[in-house]
Image 1 (tube, rainbow, N blue to C red):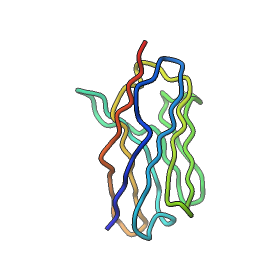
Image 2: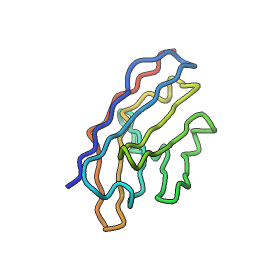
Image 3: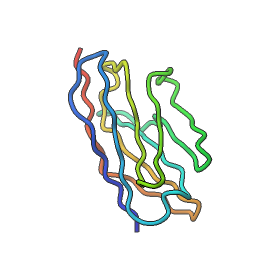
Image 4: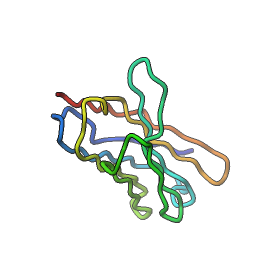
Length: 116
């Protein structure tokens, strides 16, 4: 069983930065694709960024070079550095682990609020 614990959310002014972290338990982290998703009230859950086992990554179109995803397999942690935050980035951010063994896990989410 895998547990994902997010941290680093909070309130920030527009133009500011936050770094989200997601720490995983278990032994499959290094075999997995890690992702960050977000969901605003009344909206669907959207992909923000993902990073594969080989270190390649993809981003949602709205990121436009503002966010960077990274992973530390030794610490079993995935990070999301968010810069130039906008009020429309306000959402609950969720960590996701998609393993090569067919298992998929979600964290509990962390709130990010960007004030104008």
